[in-house]
Amino acid sequence: MNFVTSNGDIGYHMTGVFPKRKYKVAHGVYPKKGWLKENQWEGLIDTKEHPRIYNPKRGFIVSANNFVASKNSKWGISHAFAFWHRYVQLTDRFS
Image (cartoon, rainbow, N blue to C red; front, side, top):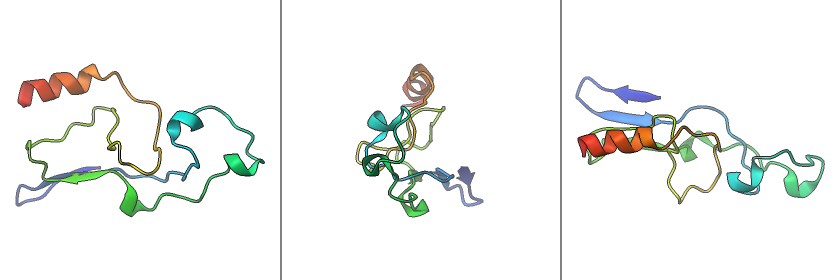
């Protein structure tokens, strides 16, 4: 969800319900034997841990269906992202 306030603040907060996978998404994108303990989820990611940004220094926010979490993210969110060129073209143009 993107937002703008009447004061001119901007932000982004990923919404939804995401499982806490034992392994990051790189290891969890294919079907696994869910009845085995090593493949089971560890609950759901708390919304406080969802990717977010508020008033970024560069003055704009780009998601363009690309990866929005940092490398420091504890949990994998998804593995299906759009082509990176949409993000790069926008950031090059406005940076």
